[in-house]
Length: 500
Image (tube, rainbow, N blue to C red; front, side, top):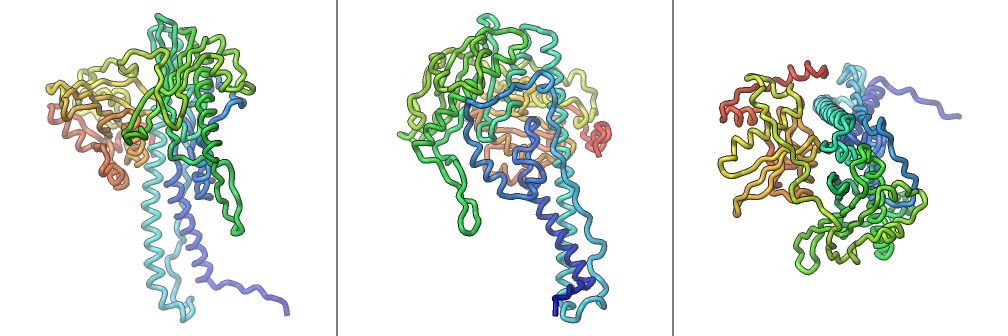
């Protein structure tokens, strides 16, 4: 007698529907954990479909994405492509819960009745969890949208400067920095990259940070076990040394090539590339910082390069580049040329307070004005103690909006300030980014100020770290202390920005 398919009872079908709902919750939680958007990369961990489908995706990419090799095809984006903001990733829509929490008890078999109370509790808990996830998704969508809007305004600002062809404008150096970001690298290699142009000597100075590979493994492949698990295969120490050096030379040539290609205003004839690194001195265990490689190349030579065929090490040596002899036991080198010690990102501050009307809604003001107002607030708060507050120019990575210098020899130092004019909860990733900036800048502390609020995960991450979080209500109190009366109306700001 053949097998006869057994029709499921109504309660079994409903249970299956709730299981699907539970799986949707798990997928959305994984999405929230892994999805990223920085204005340049749509999602650092793959598409939303890959994130929700494959928890192993980011782990594998993180392992493989620690090297960058030339030769390879490396087409340079045209101006229109550079000025086209990367749209934020699509935020998935949660499923609605099944219509019924529990069926009529008459439709359940007798043995199942004792489980109904627990099942009701489980399903109600799932609905509560999904409601919480919906809020996080809404916050994530707003976070992505705010980054997109700020980048769009930054692009327009650079375009205006480039169009004016003003030799005193910093727009061309900002364009090269933008070009570096838009020609994406593996996440492990995305480190501070700054450009300055000395118009008198017609020279561009590019400086970027190279990561410390001391405790890093480089995955060169995967071996499948009998259990069908993919186990990573790591490069040997000898192979790792060669790969790191190849990556260093490749990044140097890449940086010079991008700068030469984006010399739109024809402000320089040569490019100097300085590579900086942080490492720990093996003799003392103390942190060290210095230039590990430096090179100067004529623009005409850089433009003649074919990145798909050249050998980066041969190119580096032909240009008489200088690098530390041993990347495992670093000896800093003297850079060929450096900009002056003043931070070229600093710009003249604006007296925003003089033209912002009292009772203005801070959450609806221009983001650049908000940054300058925050800098002014810190000037009012600390200038009497000899502390300087400097505003940085609008940045692509939104890393630093102002820098505070305290000359006190005992408790002084450098503090980085970041202002977030948001209308929804600040995502924990913004706090993580600030912590990374504090480390990269060698600052004593980072201060994050927003018109909105922070979630528990943001406060948890900031705990025991040199980070201060100032939310909207506390920002208003700080301003009131100096006789400044403003308001924060998030709903009004969302309406003005046509936000849902």
